[in-house]
Amino acid sequence: MTPNLAVRQSLTLSPDPSRVVVKLFVPGEDAALARTRAQALIDRVARLDDEETGRLLRDTLHRFGGRHRDLAGTFQHHYDLVRHRAPRARDLSPTTRLLVGAYFSHEYAVESAALCNPSMVVHPDQDGLEPGQLRVAISLRQIGEGHLSSIGFASAVLGPDGRLAVAGRPGPLVVGQQVAVQRRRDLLAAGLAEDDCDNEVSATVLDSLPERYDEATFERTLAGLPPDLLSRGSAPGIVEQLRRTNAASYAVAFPADTSLHQRVLWPATPAESNGMEDARFVRFVDESGPVYRATYTAYDGRRIATRALASRDLRRFEITPMRGPGARNKGVALFPRTVGGRHLALCRADGETIGLTCLDGDNRWQAPVQLHAPGRSWELIQVGNCGSPIETDAGWLVLTHGVGPMRRYAIGALLLDLDRPERVLAELPGALLAPDEAERDGYVPNVVYSCGGLVHSGLLWLPYGASDARVGFATVPVDALIAAMVELPPPPDGRRGSPAQRPSGDGPRV
Image (cartoon, rainbow, N blue to C red):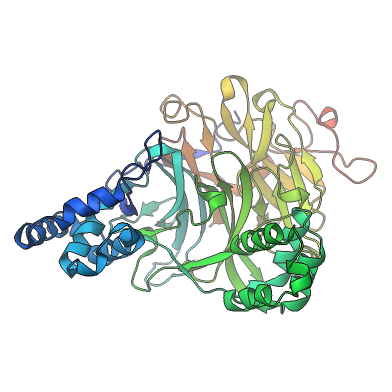
């Protein structure tokens, strides 16, 4: 490991099992026969007398109300979801309905198993700071029972100098609620092209939709399909595919009076039903102003897919699929601005090398150009990025991860040309950060991993997951890091050289 560059901070974030949300619980759904026992449970609750019903509800609200926002409203919502199981729903009193909802609810500790893989961006609120300080927003991968991942947040203040203060994270937590969104026809078209859905039905729908449309417009368009198209045997399946592809884009929002650390982005579609993993946030800036963007891995228990987030204020988020060969596999990381008019991203489309991909006019991420392949002993299994490129005067600083013997993860660094990021200028010859003895044990042993840092006052601030047991923080002087890199000779064709072309030891410095 490159010595004396990364300085670990003493402050860490550990999983907090008291951070809980309320989820729907249907008895019997997890049984081997998947036979719901909902109706029988509702019948038993309905047979309680009014005194017992009132006492149970008051006791439940007293016991759990302080841990959640509007718990009675949640009970009512859960009752509404199962009331079709009640044979005489109209006969149930309001109190009984809330109590039924309580029996169909349970607490879920979002980070009871692990807390890891953070990214760090400038916080939208910079009020009340002293000179030399910067408030940052930290995204977190929270893992609970069943290895189910969601996205959470924390806030911290950096500086002055190398000081770090992380704000407390008290509840209650709030899951984002889906809200109306103006969907984009070009993203729907890209999704249909990805699934090879090119036929008269899909073409007619695309031709009929405006560039921006809402859910009602989409459904009216489907309802208005000509009968001779709908009469085809394949039409029902195509219409269902259109609905699935359309629903992959959605938006969620949080109440204005919630703090960032109380907000939880929770799986909302079938594609992410088993988790939203490894969000890589970046503050993207163009002529329209700053916007927070992120990529994450959606997991349904069998397949992975890449999704994009966008938010102006970290309170309302729009989620869209990412399409094209450059968005396959995990680890897409967006650049913080366009380069030469191009929207660029780092990726690992083949599962083991770092590539550079560009968004085309059809909203598909093109086949990547290879930037960095496994070459050194600590990264021979695979390499990938540790978040979005960071712009410096010397070039784009890219933090990398490499996997070595015993699946041990370490963090390294590359430097890309500012105007031609296809060209790798230099690389750090050794690891910047690797698990020490205090970090090697955890939910996933022998791993240090980050989803993105930032530069403040000449220091690279690097949040990282330590074996998924906790989140640590390290600082690295940017000038010293770049000075420690080994310059790579430009290849004859101006593209990235092969691993064999890299110097194996000391060489010219950048």
